[in-house]
Image (cartoon, rainbow, N blue to C red):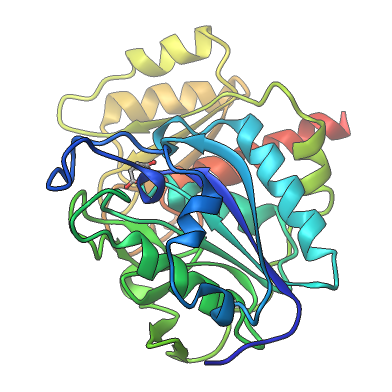
Length: 321
Ligand code: SIN
């Protein structure tokens, strides 16, 4: 087992990993965010050893991640930053629901200078299941967080390591529910050892002031995600503009194409000062810019991650005014 120096701190936020059902055989009718983080850690043999002998737990939230809120993100990012600034901390693990894990991972990657590992751990089966996957995922996350040289925001699910940038939940039920798409996984955790596909990701470089803007903000900009589809029209965009939306990310068809009615409404919104970003609704690949494009693209980010980047851009702009 590869172990660095310093302690591992596990921050609990809830999710299925902390979920319970009344029947052990029920893998879907459970309530997420029920078991405390201390109790989750106690149930895993060998965890302290994997952490190099020192592991601490803190409960940041206890929620189903579909209900993740900016207030929790503010608290979580603040605590992660404090821990990363502490030379006695080797790495941070965050337990989280799978449903919005990729959003929290991308948010943390965007605001933290993670020169050490921040590893999100999750599960597709509740803690009360006949065969829960949480204990192994959590053990693997601790192994990853304790591995010398590890850095950046990552997750490890079903033994596969994904970076914050590429990870996406791709299956609603399977235990191996995540993918890094065309980028492929960062590596694997196998029997307590990390095997990398190539190397550690470059350290994330947050935009100057990003964390401070998050800490100082209590009312976040309003950024919505829309989809272009058969029969789409622009009325929803006009409605959002009237409601005072600050930004819209559109999950476009194919290579950034939009139903003409939706496209016209988005052009009008953009001209009136609403920020618009075009992502693709395709599961793989990215929008390739072409001459004549008038709306900015998401630079390869999925619609939900493009929304987070736009939120942070708008926050920064608001703080500079
Ligand atoms: C959640 O995202 O909190 C519930 C679903 C899960 O963790 O798999």
